[in-house]
Image 1: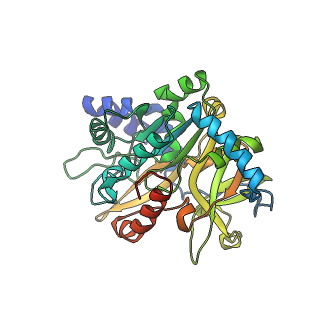
Image 2: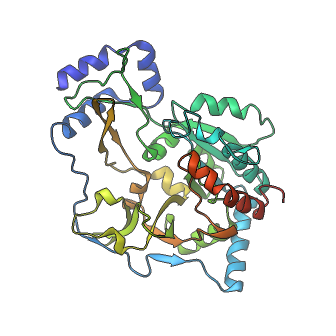
Image 3: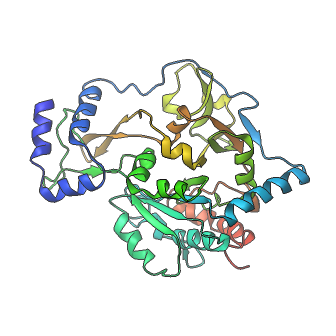
Length: 372
């Protein structure tokens, strides 16, 4: 397989080679990854002892007015200095909203998801950067959309990685016209893609202290001085937002892996571990110390994902951002998911957007991102 796949990669169209290179693709590394993972059943489960999180692993924000006020003051100082960056995960394959880039879909009252993020940083002011992690499928569309906002300051895009799909036998998976099919390998690309861009390194050099990382569709996860102050007060590099499960909610959960607090997706859990025993789950919103993220050097787990196109099966390798909790000390914080204080408003498709519009409007208005 190694020789055949290497030959296929060497024979790629020069334009595709250039495209892959621009997005950090390494042919030799890719061949090695395929060799290690193909021809056997995917083994995505973690090795080690998995236990539920302890009471101190998942904390609530303080309710004491004096303590909250002190944390808010600390957070406001950081925002005034422009030392918190907002990173929005706006990549992926742009397939869930009828082929329209999700960031450019109208979220509420004529405003797109991108519009509302721009209004958020404008409201905060003080030069807090907004960085959009794009993909090959979303990069040009988002850059074009930003030209309609010349007033937007300190806004930048950076592309996530690009990889290739494979057949189960280890050949390049090709479309109807014989063209190799590419894909975005997941939001776990963020640290590497951000390093390539140079944005974070310069931010830290200029005094930047932390970043908020969140999904493009979760308009509840906004810059919040209380959470900034709280994150800085506990001293760990990561604060990971979680919410209470409702009904049959499923998703990545906080757990202890060999005694370390981490986020684990359900497919990574040992078969003997019942994920429903943990009554909170990950929102994919992280507050991360900027310097710790700049210095992060970790081995990533790539998960073998099998998908179907018509009657053809193909394989792609993906990684998840939550794995940074396996390498940086993490404190979980339970945040609201209801009402004007909600920090969890995920919108996976058009139907969910229709259901959530009133909630999005309520949250955006209460935080003065939209006018009442």
